[in-house]
Amino acid sequence: MRRCRARRLRTIALVPETESNTTRPAEALLRVIDLRGHRAGSGAELSKVVPRAAFDVEQAMAAVRPVVEAVATRGEEALRELSERFDKVVPDSFRVPVERLAAAEKQLDAQVREAFELAIERRRQVSLAELGDTSVAVDVDRGARVIQKLIPVNRVGLYVPGGLAPLASSVIMNVVPAQVAGVGSIAVTSPPQVEFGGEPHPNILALCSILGIDEVYAVGGAQAVAMFAHGVPGLCEPVDLVTGPGNIYVVAAKRLLKGKIGIDSEAGPTEIAILADDSANPAHVAADLISQAEHDPLAGSVLVTDSAELAAAVEAQLEPQLGRTRHVERIRTALTGEQSGVVLVDDLEQGLAVVDAYAAEHLEIHTHNAFDLAQRVTNAGAIFIGGYSPVSLGDYCAGSTHVLPTAGAAKHSSGLNVKSFLREVHLIHYDRGALAEVRREVETFAEAEQLPAHGAAISVRFDEEAD
Ligand SMILES: NC(=O)c1ccc[n+]([C@@H]2O[C@H](COP(=O)([O-])OP(=O)(O)OC[C@H]3O[C@@H](n4cnc5c(N)ncnc54)[C@H](O)[C@@H]3O)[C@@H](O)[C@H]2O)c1
Ligand SMILES: N[C@H](CO)Cc1c[nH]c[nH+]1
Ligand SMILES: [Zn+2]
Image (cartoon, rainbow, N blue to C red; front, side, top):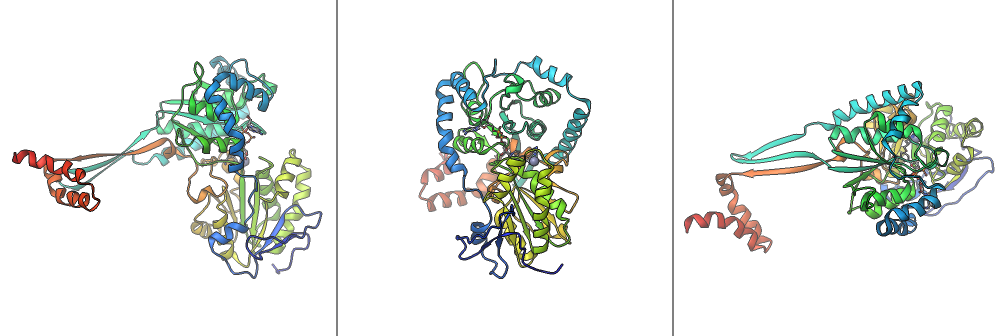
């Protein structure tokens, strides 16, 4: 494909890294960050120029702090007020009666049930493989054994989003790995829905029933995370770990309460990055960018390409495709937001550096050598390879997780998986002879760290015998 400047695209020059010059032809949705001809830049420099939302978790924390405080101090009374304020409905009971779960399962459409069962089956297959060895024993010397044992978290609270869309698939993505890990006590929560009399969406209740979950709450947002973390007397016992995706307020509450509870990754507003060359199909690329923008006005859709022609062709696809979809305004807001855009690069090497710096929740690769490039990516929540592995597949039925780190958290965190629900505990057993073998080294270490009592805890075991 001949390289040319994309005319309908808004352009930002990289001068210097933190500033932006924007020209924006009115009809273009995606802005362009043009890195062509610029030095590759370090990962840290590139991180500053890749598109990201200005409204971040830190800001949302200010909003959720009083919410969390209210639930911690006033329990169910606060839940009632917050539910009224944020969800416009107060459930008759925040704990969904088990009969309602069974009723929802009974009323489930047969075709929807089939889709649910396929997704459960595939996520379970992959979860079982994730479990791996549950106990590893190493004899570092004769009589000196270290065992690593995997112990499931005792009680978990799983969040299922339900603000802008009822994400039934998140029940599967949370519950299946928790069950495979062997978690004993599992509670699920999802926002109450006005149209369902304050219960979570029936598909969510039905999936809980199918998966054998009977502790389900109609509580959403930051208040749900607070309920799980602090417990609510007479309603919900505190949990040890909260997992699951959610909007910026859910993520802010998880960050705020981390420590009191464990959390999985900060799985917030959805992101998709697509690394593509001139072999990509513009209609497919546009559809995938739109699909993830559908989640949230704060969602980020980013195309990284060395082909200005592809970029222009993708941009040309967006409006017509938008015209055929339901959540037009939400998607338009996401695509035109500063968290979305096209990054033009000189070649796929620079493209790789950009996607690594961005550390997308989802990375799609649509290039000639997609599989090879995928092996070289170091930062991404999940990587979708080639033209027939779109993110929507992973959202539901690929067998992979869809609960994935956002906002750059893929640089240090993993998507939700069986290991998220397990603790790796070392069991140490040395016999007398094995301890004698290393007593000098331990005593020397203790001396070097100026902690003589540490050394004495060794020597006493041998001095005693001399006494
Ligand atoms: N990263 C992932 O793994 C992943 C997976 C699925 C979905 N998601 C994301 O999950 C999110 C789902 O968001 P959602 O809003 O549809 O549902 P949600 O259930 O996450 O949030 C809805 C709740 O937010 C609270 N809320 C709304 N406005 C508020 C405000 N101004 N202040 C405080 N609290 C407020 C309400 O209590 C409401 O119940 C989207 O951002 C989507 O992109 C992420
Ligand atoms: N794409 C979302 C993760 O960001 C997951 C999801 C659930 N349902 C549809 N999509
Ligand atoms: Zn999705």
